[in-house]
Amino acid sequence: MSSTASRVEVVTTLVIVLLVVGFVASKPLRRALAAHPSPETCAALLDRYVEHVVHAIDAKPPAAELAARKAQARSIAGGDRKFARCPTYLTADEAECAMRAGNADEFERCLP
Image (cartoon, rainbow, N blue to C red; front, side, top):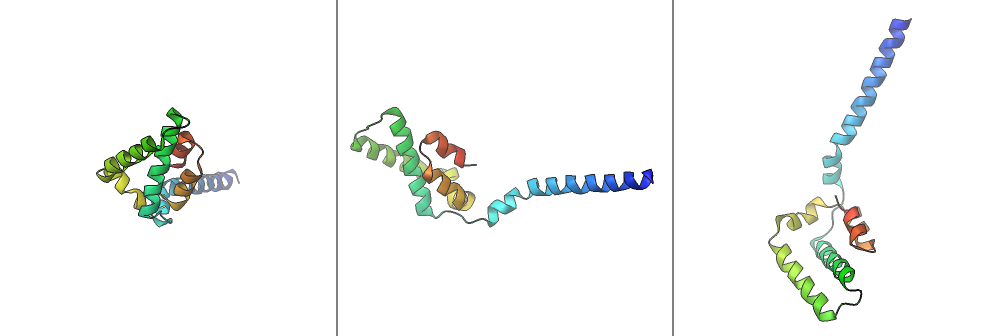
C-alpha cells in the first residue's frame, strides 16, 4: 500500500510542478493574446508620464514648460524601438492602469 501512496504522491507532485511551469511559461502567450493599446493610447501614455514627472519636480509648472517637455519626449520616443513596441507589447489593462495612476511611481508599477 505504501508503494501505491508513494506513486500517487509522485504523480500529484509532478502534475503540480508541470502546472506551475506551464503557467509561468505561458506568460508571453497570454501577453500576445491580450488586447493591446492603440498607437494613440501609447502617445497619451507618454504625455501622461511626462505630466507626472514634471509635476513631481514642480507642483505648478508653467504650461509652456509642460508643453515643451511633452514635445521633447515625443521627439525622443519617435526614434525609440522600445516605445515603438508599445501597441504590440503592452496590454490594454496595463495601459488603463497607467492612465489611472496618480503619480510616476504608480504609473511605472503598472507596466512590465
